[in-house]
Image (cartoon, rainbow, N blue to C red):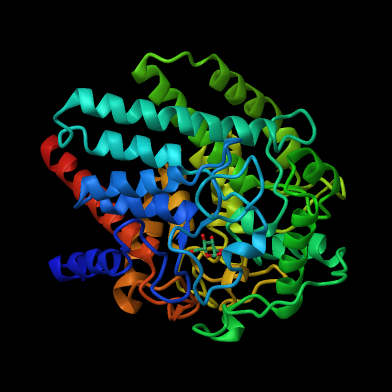
Length: 448
Ligand code: GLC
């Protein structure tokens, strides 16, 4: 199934989307640079072109704002037929913005974890250790500044858990997680805009119009507040603490701390973030009655009672106790009414539990399988020793891409591809998953 031709095809997708400076998520639907896409892409590139992987990371960090934020969309090549265009964010005259046109939002900060993984995977390839240290030092201070910004500029309640001010920051744009919070918002005086995301992809696989209007309305709210962090925390109508985002940040803090130790840097500030998150995480997110991690709506001051597959992300971060992990697996992962394949689905893992009212198996973040979520969840399961379950997720992910090519997301009922075609992170993480499988097989052979 996964022969050399298939690996060549995955590499070809990354080459196709390579602008020379950065790699687009897909050829037409996403013609600019996206934050966590570039991180996943770098991990795939590192399998066959290490200098290009480093360049991808550098291109992303070059867009960092002066205040530390790393933006979610970066427009190094200017406008295109994509909405929103760079000027829509109104960041040109902001002292805290960066030099490259960008959005004014951020995205899940997985970059430190990826940088460390690339460093570990490629230790043998990087012969010149002096050069390696130089590069790492430069990246380290930028990564540290981004994490510091998340733990402070986005801290609404003194916990250090960052708040998201727009669903796009979660990376799960129209998840049913945001339905109630968005329902409370009435978009007033909506600026004129024209949606472009349904030009290349069927409308029933994209967010519904009322969601999209609220996405645009929230951008307008941010612009009116000049994207000033304090004002955003006080006034944005959408303000949530998200399990996926906070888990990724905690894991990234761990990895940043490891990088700091390697470089002989002081780790006290990072140690402080790690300790604070561990202290508050359960109280904020764990629902003991349901055995699930739930997001928290800071504006409404209440948990968001939606079961999305982000609930498994604390495994990736090592934030669950062995008991919590066992409950997540037994009651949810292996439950055919929620995530496990059964009569109504064939592949791990629907992005939303199948028995949720908002579940829609072809609509973007409302149910389809996403390869990067599968990768995060498989890594988490492995971390807790659920090897059989992690293998099942990797197996299904590879089956999906092998049967239906590198699509943006997949219908869990029959595996058919949805959304954008030639999708970069699906190709990049395929390369990573195949390489990890080969490594594990070699290790097993050596032990035998
Ligand atoms: C969509 C996804 C987001 C991704 C971006 C580019 O907005 O929801 O997670 O980063 O597309 O692929």
